[in-house]
Length: 464
Image (cartoon, rainbow, N blue to C red; front, side, top):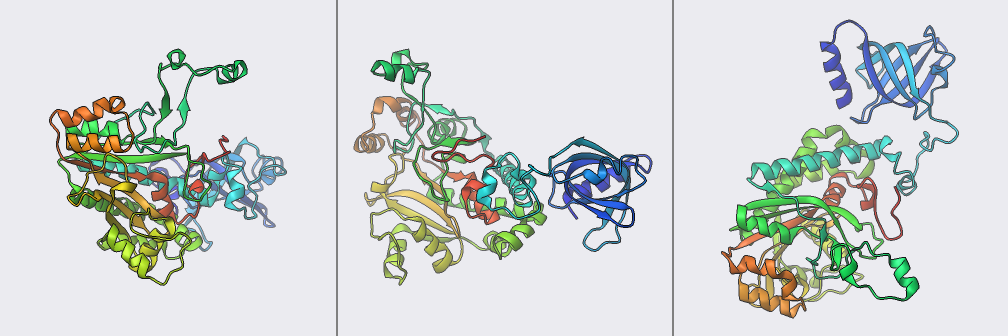
């Protein structure tokens, strides 16, 4: 029995009189020869529908009730009774059915036949009404709630970092420019951009990460986290990439890499456990219809410790296995999704935390290890998705940071405030980033990341 129905029953039992009222959208209507109709109604708050029995004696039975179709919105008054039908505990016997909004059955796209997820992306304004995307939305909500609850309980303060920035945290240059300059008019005149006439009087971009700003507050308040949208202008059309996505990024002063790994494991276990505990009906659906064994897989993640491997150990495993990879692997190259999935799905059969990556493939802010070749970085990999968390201990030594920035070709003057954090009371600190959509992908088993965000933004697509 659905959460909505349980809540309805609880409310109904407290109300006065036999008449109860529910609101929702029609999923199906079935007319009986016995002189009544069965209406399946859902309001989106749970997976289950509520069956309404509408008798022919109702005043608007012929004119309206028998014309109801999928998508119509209704308000129903009646008595909630035990249902004689299998698979449902209750049904509402209607004394009144009011039609609030009609849905043309000839044009309403969500008919009873199955639609592919690709097709449903064209109807992003309606797809939350389907079983799958309603369940995804509820799980996404639960994951978001768990994120806030976990970090609050761990003593982290929620910090709002800017969406508009002048710095490139990752150093990759794949950023969306923000400007108020009339670029069309400028191009027509053949002119060059003069940023002194722009809104911020300098080049500005949508942020790829709130990490650098979070470090400011971590080195003042101890523990903070930021949670909001981030943007990457990466021309990638894979099932794992979005141009706009949500990131949670905790940052903690006096943390080292080991602390960071413990926090990330505890964090994921808490999020997954909350989904199993509070979204059981939706999780059963994903387990049965989307990815068989998903519930038991998540339970195992919650109960078992994560496997730890160094990057060097992982390279040796990948080089010596008999797997045929599309991308060759050697020490100093970045791992691809196929390598990450081999480690999690075949070698370990569970989550893996990889540490100590070559400094040459990681950003400037990661702490150089004593060997001079690697950094105190970590990635958490999970089956089916690959990397779900990326993090590191940050470089807190002023001279080393300055040298790293110089090697990366960064203008230190543009990061003067970041350097100041090492100049005035520097401390060891660490943090990580979790892509919300990849977490929801893993929890639900959905194959494409575009199906776990309400309105996906990808190359060539900014609908809705």
